[in-house]
Image (cartoon, rainbow, N blue to C red; front, side):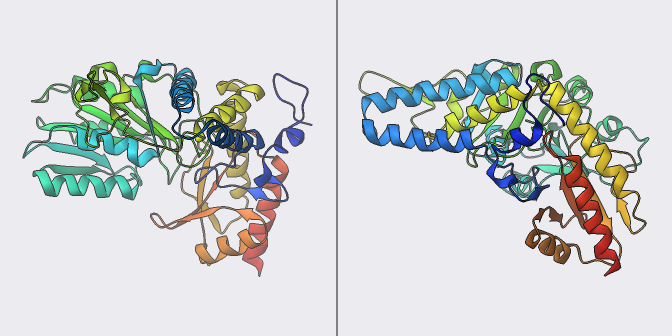
Length: 398
């Protein structure tokens, strides 16, 4: 019986707090994590409070400010930073778009990205290039040999006119972790025309999965969500902006939450911290739910303890997949994350994943590369992995 490092509660009992895990084998944390019952209750309680006190009353408006500050603080603690560096957003895409559109682009500026970035980010860069005469180049990491250095690959694409490098901390298709601190140091040291080359990170697959100390990495912009590995509510995420990079940005979408005003309520400027990129009314009832989810994870173990168990499980899944000859994992070594992607010979991946879901196994397919992705969290059970492996093997015999 597996128990929490801190308490005597068994993992089976702990999992009862997640309704989506009842009678299901859930392997889709990289798409969306299931919310614990405490987070669901927090949303309901917040809405009841808003309605009982009166929407947009002074009492509720004051409560919203308190909730936002507490949520920035909880996020900052997890990322080893200060609340002033955190902007509350709705999603990773929103967080990425703040610096993408907030930099002052000039014709001839250059962006570097990789071939493992999410389509939404690629589309934004394509539009920036079209509007402002910016060029971009793509670093190939998807098929990079295991002994190749991704830092060197990125460095080879830097130019004197490079303004921004866009990468994912954990590649959403292969599960590979990029050496963030080394990449940032290389970009900042490059002799570019406009000062240090800034680094924007899509952190959809790293926050909530692995221990993080963002100031120690030197990263400029780090966009994340609460609904994946933190198992919080959909519609709430954040953006970390380093104090050094804050001066490079201007708000693109502008609203009352990000501005300062005079005695007559007229705008006078921007708030001086991450709040200047928050726009207007959001679903404030989600704030307490995310804090509840973060607190629940912390009650089971430290970020390091949770990450160690997650890696143990992903290694176990990877090793079991290797026992089936018709299955090829995208990575030749066990990933140091909870994402394990693989191909199955002679199988239509989408059809198989649909059939598996009907049977209570939740995975997902990727289009590029064409594969199946299974995700494990620290509270996944070895028995779930065994059952999944047996079902995959059976599908190849049918």
